[in-house]
Picture 1: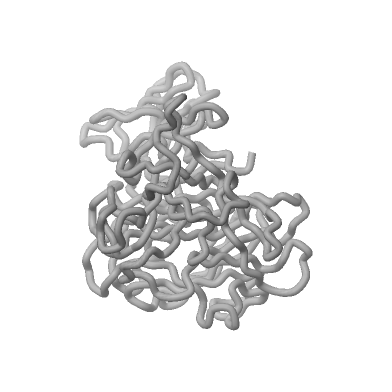
Picture 2 (picture 1 turned 60 degrees about the horizontal axis):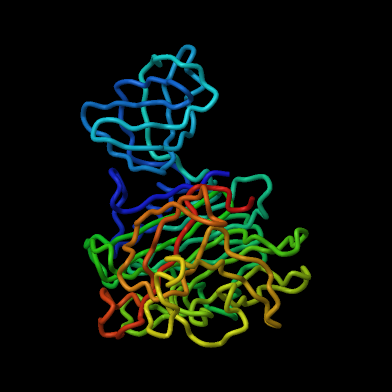
Length: 399
């Protein structure tokens, strides 16, 4: 399965603001429709690599997945999803493995390919999204975007219409009205930074409620989808991460993903325990290497490990585990890697790097996470109010 990356700095990106419906517009663009459609002047394929040119400028960035359409004749196999390998001012190269050398014909277009989900039901600033992959657990995400600064989110095992479903997680008793995904610190049209990373079975939502364009600002990171389970027959190994209260104007440490060994204030629920019995359960979230250590180790804190590691100049990354109430490991969150080192401002959001060691051959992208009220390390929250996570954006989250 392919991993798709979208963010507010991309050409044609929808705007996240403190307006009702702004969050659903972004989810629709990333999960269902794609965006940034342009015409391509030429496509030349040589040695399994396609070079697309455009005199008006190339709006795409490396590593994104494009949806190519309109190719005719012998090169028609180039239609479909193609990953961008490199970008220049007026050209880009795309993966065309298996297609014979030739110059393509047709009225060719390209846009950012959507993650391939299904919008099962819709209402006025309401939406129900379903994973499309046939191997998925088939859970639904209901999004209520009728408010200005936050969305309310609930996962369901199944739904029959926009308001009716079975097996909610969290239940209304756990979080009345559903969890919160942040959009903006205030109502209004001011644009906010955002990022969506998804495959066909999971989606992550990252937003910076109180900063507009700074890539050194912290965002809140939440997600929904199928985890990678320890038990292959776990039919309820889905997750929904959210807040229990509105955090968009908070100037306190919200315990975000990059922000500690355990993430106690970012609520995570699953539809049922691994036994398949009962209803929604809370899940813990730990860095893999420090799951038995209760110390709050942040990648923005002086209590964190040193970066880079002295003897080998390494950046250390951990998977993030989902744990049951008895602290047994149920699985891990796909594609997500946490840094336990004191990285400071070594990485800005959207920075990319090539993986090494066990991650050789992978491309990673950084996102800064932490208190949504702060924009710098020494904001009102003080040093250590942020962390840095990385996503594997090269695909294969479940391989």
